Image (cartoon, rainbow, N blue to C red):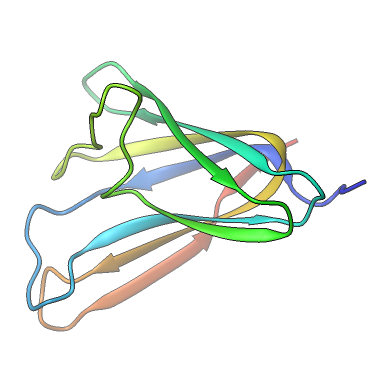
Length: 123
């Protein structure tokens, strides 16, 4: 049995910029590690300052695998993407314990930056 990780994670700071410079597009990713014996079915809910949440963004992280879920590419069950140029937060729920990290590649200027942090784990 896998007792590493959690089934609920929070990322309070999300933002997909409208513009990028150069050939590399600015993006964010929810980086998932599943150390367990079963595939993890993942649901992302997106929260905003001034609008209702967007829900039902689905992903799978295979058993003993990793999945880098690109937030500029994932779509909900209606085909909607996370909007650009609007701050958001994320709740990640999984049916199996997982470990979650958040990464941001900011290419809005020629001097690119990469930011990464472990998500907040709810026990």
